[in-house]
Each structure stands twice: as C-alpha cells, then as structure tokens.
Length: 426
Image (tube, rainbow, N blue to C red; front, top):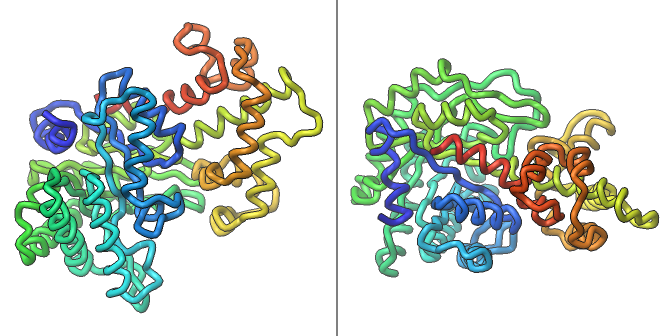
C-alpha cells in the first residue's frame, strides 16, 4: 500500500474503531521540512507536507516557488536526509481564487484553474478545494452552491491534468477553514462549532456540483471535510478543544462513513486535546505556525547563549536584527498587531500567530542567523545553558537523545512539536 493509499484509508480505519490520523505540516521553511522528514524517517512514518495557494502558485506566491519548484525543494531535502520519496505526500491547501480575489470572478477563477493544474501536474496528491471567498464585486463569503460549483470546476481541471499526465489520481478535501488562517488577530471570546446540518449541506451541494460535471469518480476520492471543531489561537490566547461542544458534528461521521474531518489551526493544543480530536474523527491535523514558533524560540535561546559563550559587543542580537527588519518591512505584521507600541513590539516577536515567520527567508534575516550560528561554531553547549535558555530541550539533551550543538537543537525544537502530533495520531 502506498502513502496516498494509506491517506485515503483514513475514513475506513476510523469507522473500524482504529485510532489513526495524520499530521499535515504546513510550512515552507527548510528547517521545518528537514525536521519533519527526519522525524518521519526515525519513526517509519509517511510525511504529509502542504503548501497554501498564497505560499506557492504559478506566480511564485510569497515563497517565490511554483508547485513544481516546491516539489523539487522538498525532494532535495528528502534526498539530503535519506527520506524515501514513496513515503512523502505533497498537498495543496486552500486551492482557489484567494490570491486573486481582487480580480473579477471569471479572472480570479481562471487564475485558480491554472494554479490547480500546476499542483496536479507536479504530483500533489492531496488537494483542498476552497473557492469560498468572494472576488471583486461579490460578498466576502459566498453561498454554498456557488462555492461548490467553483470547487467542482477546479477538480475538473485537476482531473484532466492527471489523466493527461498518467499520474496517480489525487484525493480531495472540501469545505472551508473557519479559523482565520495563521491565527486570530483579536482576543478569543468564543467560537461557533460547525453543526451537523451545515456540514451535511456542504457535502450534498458538492456532490451535486461534481455530478453536474460528470466527476463521480473524483467525488469518490473526497476523503475529508474542513470544519470548525472549536479550536483557534490568537496572539496569546488558545481556544482548547472541548469534545462535548463538538458532539453534534461528530454524529455526521455516522451518516457519512467514507469521510473524516480535517481540522485547521490545531497549533498549541494540549496533548490530550490533539488526541481527542483524532479520536473524534478529526483525523487530519494541520499545524504550521507552532513549528516556526518553536524554531524562533530556539533561535532566540541560542542568541542568548551566544552572548554568554561568544560575546560580540558590536553586533546586534538576533532579536534586534529581526526587529529592524520587521520595522523596515512592516506589511506582514502591521495590520495584524494591535495595541500600544510596547504591546505591538511583543506581538511582532512572540505572538502565537508567529507573523515573524514571513521574514526568515529575507536575505537580512538569513545573514543574521548565519552570523549567530558562526559565533556558536557548532560548539557543544553546556547543559546548564540549555536548561536556562532552551529549557524544553534540557531533558532530551541530558538523556543523550540529542547532541547539544546549535543545528541539532534547532531541529530538536521543531521535532518536539512534531512528537506531540505523532502521539496524537498514532
């Protein structure tokens, strides 16, 4: 059985009473990808890596990569760590007109169709169809029938591309993300959990739209629906999963045994909440900002350690260098961070929404990280300093499971988050 077959089997395994899920790694940071592949290799797991329509598209997205570029990027890292490609699944997330919603509907959908064709041609085997957003002249959120018709058009383009290329037919996810992508921007008061009737209607209108385009075989490969289980995070707030609040929606999976749920914004959930999500049928857990948040935590900890082991009085700390960069280029945080100057300064660096993740690819950020790593020069870091500045990793270092060297600690910081998801999904 291939990795995509195992992914497609998730609903059957759930219905059989098996505790089975998959972690969807949503990041384009090379160290996050490397950590995910090393983690999967060490545990003999399939690895699912997803790119969003804003990160990767035919225009390059904010990473500068097309779908084919992203595949080559991930496969180069896989070759470096020795991860077998047959255990790698690439996914496309929120594939629809979102990057071009400022255009007229027909123009935005034409761009979205070109985009999904690129994802399909590049062998992305899990495609999330999301045409829920209004384009120029339309309401911000569209009615379900319009969303379903546009999603079916995207599936039709993907199916044709796969057939012409003789590629493995993809699996699909339908439905839209209720949590704000990347986390909420205000304090969290409450969330409305998706109701059973709402998800029933979503599935029914998609089935009708697919059937109208003679896409019955494609609809049979829809494995999951995106719903709101009641999880979210903001700058410093986490809405934790409460199983009783999702009791109504869980009943849907009894009616529709060929599907599971996909949960977005599961970052920062406690271990027991993640495990309960999987047990309740939210078998696909997406995580992104938590991984780069853990990377930033480790980098800042290493910066404090460098100030002790290798002082450089004339050189700005990593935090100071990143703050100068974010102030010079504020577009990725300015409209998301609110409050006094002091509150906004904290949010820029430490928000759970992790707006700083958009800056790590910048040349100035890479140079600052390179200078930090050169100062530490792969030296072994004394355990007391690991405990003081990288406390979450101290026990692992003391047990000898990782070496206390800078790069190993960076990967370990990310893998500590992946460990939580591994425990929840297996």
